[in-house]
Length: 329
Image (cartoon, rainbow, N blue to C red; front, side, top):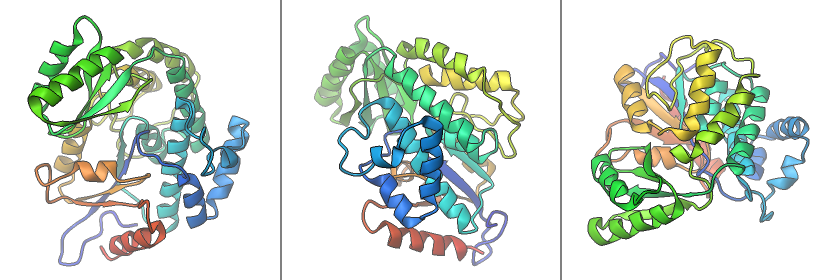
């Protein structure tokens, strides 16, 4: 295992996996991952049997409905994250810690031993179905802007509707969620007065906003039937941005159900990880490189970070990253 070993030149290293959320997706990603690791086909077969659907066919590149509902989005990204985790673990790499953004927290739960793959997959499918049945709204990613400035814009734009800052991703990147009309008003203010990049990233599901309180209540019913185990590694829930030692099942149900209608404290979580492990090497284990790219020249510029996926030449890129990580001994 790599964690606890040392980099060339005597620098210590703690390996930390970062699992991305549901925005980290693109057509054909599961096909590509199975091509890279043929054993992944068995994972898709297992998942298909559990969910009683042919997931290999559904997520095949060229199917325009592959991500047509939120349930399919969540299941697809969870599976992609898991396939990459298995790939790097098959290569002999093991991390001392992990964390996940939003949906990625379910891969974090698998990695730290709170749930097995099958339990987590069923929970993710239920979570996605609850999202699809929940209230409608929208979400927008905003960059670069500070939390205080964006909060002030949200208050002005709300006009009696729901509009909240829900993803605190970095000092300069945040996400708004709430009623669609309020999102549009906020985008107008941001363009006219702040000259920042604001992009609508979701036109149906107002995740992590108070609109989703009924979704959390619905999910709680299912989670109360899940058999949770004590974590073997530190648990870092999005809801708190703090480590939770030996959480009992009731606390896990509470955190995971309220998670869907409360803010994601990603910035706080990364800051905490790097305080606890100043030697950390952060590796994004999932499609794209969203979490890797949040760490920029103004936020933890010296941290060692990698992403496993590349939309082009993925196999070559992955081999280079694995070689660098193996050389860190």
